[in-house]
Length: 192
Image (cartoon, rainbow, N blue to C red; front, side, top):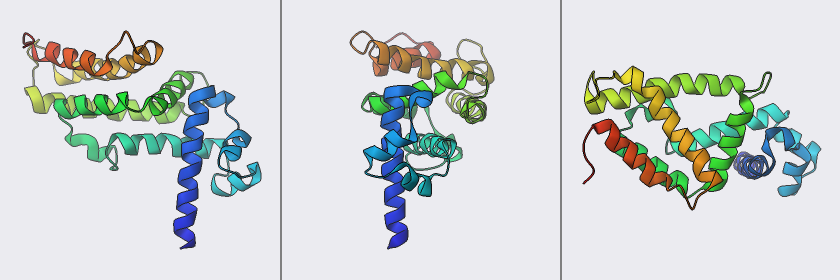
């Protein structure tokens, strides 16, 4: 019972951290603000996450678990293009999480950011996974003649780039429709 309560409290803290990071970015987020959102002191929060970096890692891991349906990123290797489109639909229903991810991603490109290594590793893995998605869908060549490895960074960039555009102007950018249009472009077929 105490272990279940501890895990529940950790989950509350991670959700609060997601909110605070979405509002203020990682550098602007304080442990004290996160602690206050869950009714703890900063010292109480440090019992669950001994550093701000440890909390950041938990936030990033939780976001990846949501994107893979509770599985690991490795388990997500069975994605298909239609399932990626469903993921984009799902992301459109959770702007706070998309905003947190985007804020952290943007900040992580700065030297010394604690999420830099996470995102560097994550993108290497995601590019490999997207190459496999494309290989499963098209074989060794897409209709355009590109290899899955050449198109994988583009697929990844479209998914994440659409998130930024959608966050900045959701009325002008229909993220799910735009992603489906990109899939049509990849398939080399005229829209129905």
